[in-house]
Amino acid sequence: AQSKGKSLLDPNRIINVAHRGASGYAPEHTMPAYEMGHKTFKADYIEIDLQMTKDGQLIAMHDETVDRTTDGTGAVKDKTLEEIKKLDAGSWFNEVNPSLARKEYAGLKVPTLEEIFSTYGKHANYYIETKSPEVYPGMEEKLLNTLKAYDLSSDRVKPGQVLIQSFSEASLQKVKAMDPNVPLIQLMEANEVKALTDDRLTAIRQYAVGVGPSFKALTRENVSAIRAHDLLLHPYTVNEKADMVRMLDYGVTGVFTNYADRFNDVVKGL
Ligand code: G3P
Ligand code: CA
Image 1 (cartoon, protein in one colour):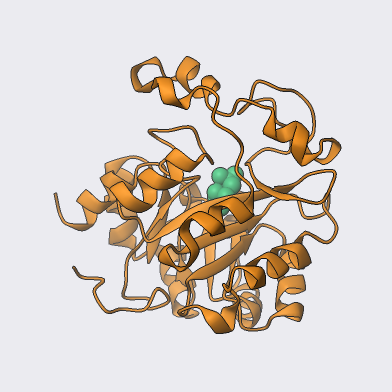
Image 2 (cartoon, protein in one colour):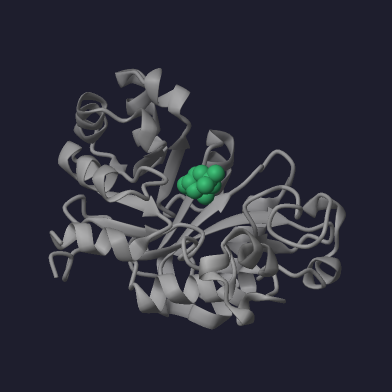
């Protein structure tokens, strides 16, 4: 209720990002994981990691290879979408998490970005990461074209409905050069957080509305420093209640979590 009426970009709104979907409960980056994150837990965003196939299709997958999250092997960049679509993206989850296994996860397909957009359209908010952009020249343009095709360009959505995130500043700058109005989030690994300076934060604020650091490197002090630069602050990946409580106490403006239900409870004070 506290978020009622507040923009997704309002620093006083606490943002719950379903990381790879509700990936604590369902196979990451599959439609059931997004459905649980979006509909069951009512997370503010579904998070989507992008990879690109040999034939230039954007798909939702975290790793550069299909090995961990499907029954196949090899690099996404060496496979066509048709080849990717033959893979089983759910059975691995049942094997790794027997207590959460469900029959219907077996045989799930890797979704394309287009399939996700055609399922949810403007009814969901998307937190989209350009992964390994140096491996996939042109992925930013493809992403913006796909957004446009689904009427999700920055001038057609509510503020913050589509956020683009990357560890690569170069990738974010490419997006900005093509559409200066898409809100951007600079991701940061722990070592980058530890090396943060005021000058770097000032520079980031020139192109991004916020940062997504590893929560492991956050302290009360660096959270204050980041927030003092008028940046949104969404640390990843905060899965334990005690860490969620601590992050909120430090002053973050949201979290990426595999357990959006748990974060809802924490925000409600349960
Ligand atoms: O995008 C935020 C967080 O997901 C970054 O780490 O490796 O889970 O994509 P990763
Ligand atoms: Ca990610």
